[in-house]
Structures are given as C-alpha cells and as structure tokens.
Length: 398
Image (cartoon, rainbow, N blue to C red; front, side):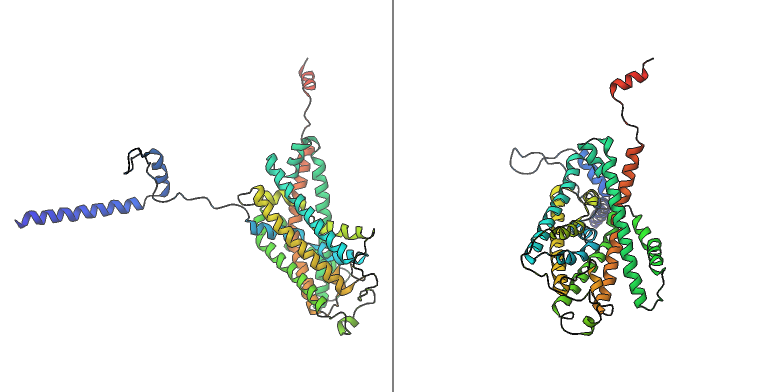
C-alpha cells in the first residue's frame, strides 16, 4: 500500500520541478517575444457576463521604450539663456546713461523682451508648420528656394560679427586677469590670449554638432551670468562706490559715479541707444530652429513654454543689471560696465572671470549658427537653378 503512495509523491515532486522550470523559463523570455506573441496569439474570452468582448493576451512586461533624444525643457531654457545673455548684458546701464528715465527704460526693456521672446517662438512654430529645420528651409517654403542664400548670408555675417566681438572681449577679460595675477604686461598678451583660447577651448567646443552636448557648459555659463548680476546688485546696495572709500578713490574721473542726467520720466531720441543695446542683448534668433529641433518630444506648445520661461528670466535679469548698474555709476556707466569697477575690487575680479566664462561657453552657440548658415549658403549657391519647362523642352529639342 505504501509503494503506490511513494510513487505518487515522486511523480508529484517531478511535476512540481517541471512546472517551476517552465515558470522560470517563461519569466526569462525577452520582452520583445511577449510583444510579438500578443499579435499572434488567439483571442480568449474573459470570464464575466455575456457579451463581453474578447480580450487578447497581453505581455507580462511592457516593451522597452527608446531613451528620449534631445534636450528637456529645463535644459533648453538654460541653453537659450546662456546663448542670449552674452556681452550685451554689460551695455544696458550705458544705454540708460545716454539720457533715459527710469520708467521709460524699464518699459522699453519689458516690451523688447516680450517682442523678442514671441518672435523667437514664431520661428520654432514656423519650422513645425513647414516641416523644415533651418532658416534656409523656412525661406524656401515661403519665398522660394532660389533666393534662400540671402537669409543664410545675413545669419553668417551676424554670427561672424558676434564671434569677433566675443573674441575681443575674451582677450580683454583674461589678459587683465593675467596681468593682475603677475604676468608681465606685453603688447602681444591680448593676441596670445585670444589665440590660446581659440585653439584650446573655443575650437573643440565649436565643432560639436549636438546642442545637448553643451548642456553642462551652458549651466556653467548661466551660473556665471547670475553671479555677475548678483555682484552688480551687491555693489549698488552696499555703497562701496558712493561713500568715500579706497575703491572710489582708485577710479578715474570719467569712471566715477555722476547723476547729473538722472531722471524718472525723461524720454527723447537718446532712448534709441538703449533700444539698440537691448536689441543686441536679446538676439539669438539665428539658433531658434536648432533649439526647436533639439527639443525632446518637440511641439510648438512645449517650445512656447521653454521660450516664455527663458525670455522671462532674461527680462528680469536685464532690468536688474540695467537698474543696478546705473544706480551705481549713473551717467558715467561705461559701455562695458566692468570697466567702471576698480581693478582691486575682489567682487569685480570674480565678476570678470564669471563674464569670461559665460562668453566662453556661449561662443560655441554662435558658431553653430555660423556653421549652419555657411553650409546652407554654399549649398544654395552651388545648386543648379531650375529651368522653366519651355526652356527644358527647347534644350532637348534638335
């Protein structure tokens, strides 16, 4: 009587082992096989009330999704802020010092910030509507491809000019820092700094093809910009350049604070100087198609959110820099505000370094626009113009 029971228990044990093996093998199957089986398996009826629709077998695990490609909204905001807020931020106090009152100056800054942000968004939305990815495609879709080289030529000239200006500012900033560090002054020091920075830093960064690779450097550039704004605000509030002090005594008379033209509501033709400075400070529209195409899961609504945040931050930042800079030096605010601060001012020293870092890491974004414009212009000029149908027939007829 015990033999059959022992055989039965052995059979049950073997069956359990086999069942466990089958379960483990099923769990070890790749997810793609389950996804394939879902389409090939026969439908089965659910247990429930009559009339229930057949339910197909579903995979045990969800299919793996590809990793998102591109920049998130946050990183797009950081890159736009770093690209836009370049050396132009240092000229705003001088624009106000040309003879613009506080109320008109703030109103002009807010208005131009809103206009610049809206036009920046329109470029990305136009790329979505036309199915294009650059200004050449936009021009070709709206005005015709034969003259698309014009817009690329304009963008190339603007980006080249910006790159030259950035290189000059980098030479000024880092050569002054080297002299402060004890490097002997030389007539070739500025040129050596520009060549060294171009070969060691600017050229490798400018050769990057993917804007998302600049996310880390863009974050550093944004931190540098925020420090510069914070340092200008601190010097405006602590009175270091208003009360008698060593810093104030070390300034040349043309750099010392003066408030003869200060006004609350003054507005005349001199306001065009501020408008020009703000127009330069807010412009980075040549890279708007690249920012839109690099946006992760891009859509006009998502791009609008990123642009609104970026240009809102820029408007607040520019208003603060303009106001605090003018409040410190008034009518004598220089076109490069950093020149007003004493060379021995420790906050100004770090501010010059931060400004140099901001321009250094924003430089490749200008070069991306230059490179894209040159490629587009060369392809437009080298392409053979299309002949009308009558001309083609005439050319092939004997």
